[in-house]
Length: 117
Image 1 (cartoon, rainbow, N blue to C red):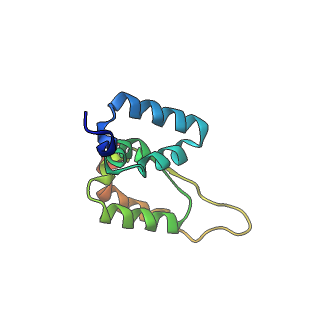
Image 2 (cartoon, rainbow, N blue to C red):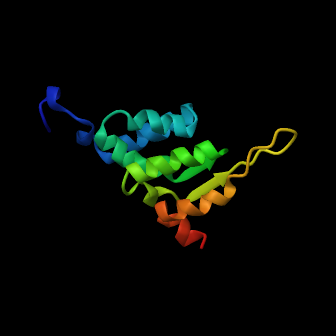
């Protein structure tokens, strides 16, 4: 074990990280707790990334655009996305059409493509 002043997130056993993540996810909304944990250090961010990005919720064209930018700028991130939830606003002030752009995400998130050909 390194000296106490040199301890990093990578020095924690994976079981401890898992318990911390489970606790914070139960206290806060799951995404907020996971996002908070991922800011601890690079090691935790890499460890938490699969759970944080497993399910993505999109509610607008802007959400889709931001996700596309993030996936293009972070190689391998799309490999963690397994589920995509889409919320479409209906009513007196409907959104402009954007759902047809989702097919472009399948190139950036290969697990989506394999589950939903």
